[in-house]
Length: 341
Image (tube, rainbow, N blue to C red; front, top):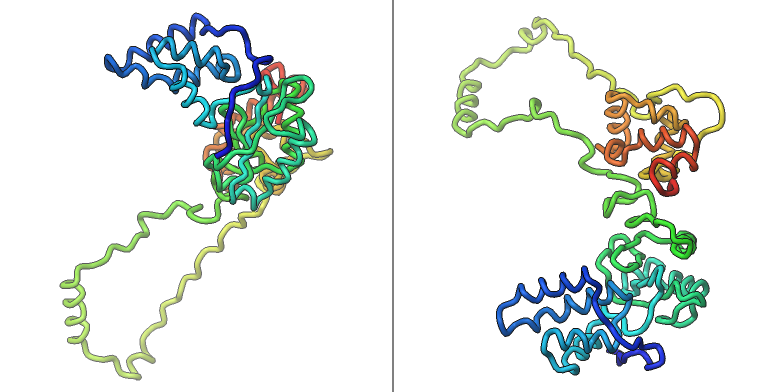
């Protein structure tokens, strides 16, 4: 483990105090522990202080030590041991932790680090010129299936590409609300491109119930008692017509008649990515107005074709599409208070 030291004295503030809300929270947290065990609250209090000021200062360590009646060196040991504590100022708008463990490294985390060096600072733990952004490389952040990924404060951003990561850094710098989680058309940690197994609901009525062994034996006995049919009898027996199975409906057939004119960018709807947009277009859905006017029956049909049950209502596609159809991105911002995806 690398040596972790407090920031230089010239950047250390002269004092520290919790604000009123955090002071009340700290007192309630300390009271949760039995008499004589209040020192167990040291990590929660340091984390709360970091959430308040962005990093753990020397005066903060001393203040927490005084509250818990601990020697300063004991609190300093905790703050310097756990890498979750930032010991020098970090970006006020975003401190980006880039996962560099094997799964993320194999999926391109080194390219993400290059982006940090070019857009923020060549060195980790150093802010950009405005003090708004900083970065560091960390060990596993726990979303290996969505590699590569980063964490910014308490939010994770996954399935990153260098191009999308550059866009995100610009969005953080501009103070925009950046979409968390996967940055591709993917539902949490589900397979990329949608589910490929367990996509159909089984017909329980068609389930064959296994018969008891005794009944099987009895059936065999009865069958053995029956006389064998002769060739002549078989020839004279009437032929029973065999019913052919009904043809399945074409799952790729359009559900709607695509309206004339240029297609709308359906990817502006949160929850719709390039793959879903292509599938919607194949179903004849190319305009925001169509999505805004979905009936319950149409929602069920589209859900069935997309194999994403409930996504339309969960992400409220209708309301988003209605705003986009009415006035584009400007109307979307008025309704939802943020830019469309």
